[in-house]
Image (cartoon, rainbow, N blue to C red; front, side, top):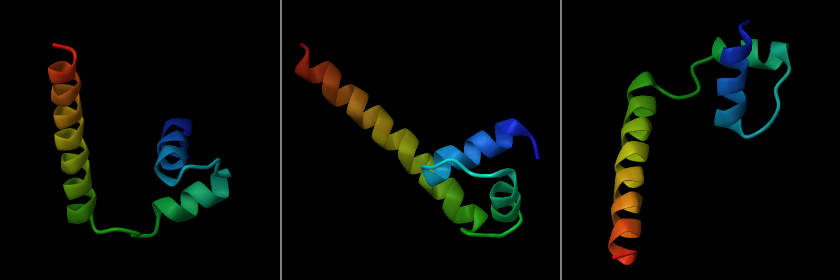
Length: 59
């Protein structure tokens, strides 16, 4: 398993993973792809809102 893929999974799960754990996680559907995409889109929206809020506060 690629180190980049392991690092992405570690960030997602908030802890270090062994190569075996990462491979097992990668081969199990923990969340539906559609839901994963929904959460990714929500993160983008919240980031944009947070930046806008910070900019308004600094004016």
